[in-house]
Image (cartoon, rainbow, N blue to C red):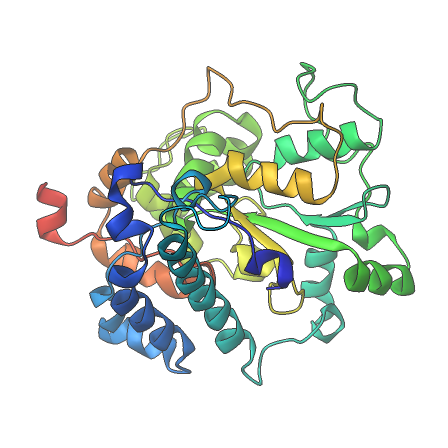
Length: 359
């Protein structure tokens, strides 16, 4: 990650009164170092098979701007502790990226990628020449709102609040549409960012949206999934796919051939081949989005859209319910396909132990 990410704030789910565990960072160090050591190991998948990764404690989210008071005046109370905690978190994540991406088998640039992988990457990077930035969009991580913002910044849309069905291609410039020398120039000189999300939460969001609401996906994928994994499929129209059936389908899919809504973020955005200046997260969407808009010098009237009142997000409780009602071995078998999303972006593996599911 570049210089911008090294000085940016993040957030924490704890309240302001919990700074001892969240802001200072010292209590986070053992589990975070353990996570970093495991990720850096070349035997990562072997560790998964042996169950070693299941012993890693969940990583707390980093402190928020308010908790760290990153713009606090010099000498203000608590500044030193907050800065120390932020440095620990940033250093650990940067080390994780460098350790994984520094392995010989990892790509060093977009041109090191096989043609198919490079094509996927370049068609997921959006370009704003006016504001000199590149955004790698990830489906199910607020990408529709970011596309609205790009259209507003380029004058194709009056406001992010305009009630129009999103056209995901019109009035947008994709890096893959440009010539090789134009691509290289922008990758080298433009501000680059993406937003990530907990892998299992993103999969559940895709499952509920595509198989619960979108007829096209029910017919294209749902019908086939039911036929393939159900003993008595009957005359399913694809709208009754279970979460377990969906995960079994993912197990049999090659990551590079997956639909973009459940393709691993690593395959979509290739964070080893592209040196992103900033990686925001769905958990800190508003404040991270504000940081990006400030960084690219967007006009003051451009703000990240508020969440719609009808939107039903995946809550931790909802995710816990689905995972606890899914065969544990099925979930564990899925980890290797998304392990780089877990490790590079510091998301803990879900706790689906019998004891946890009884709670």
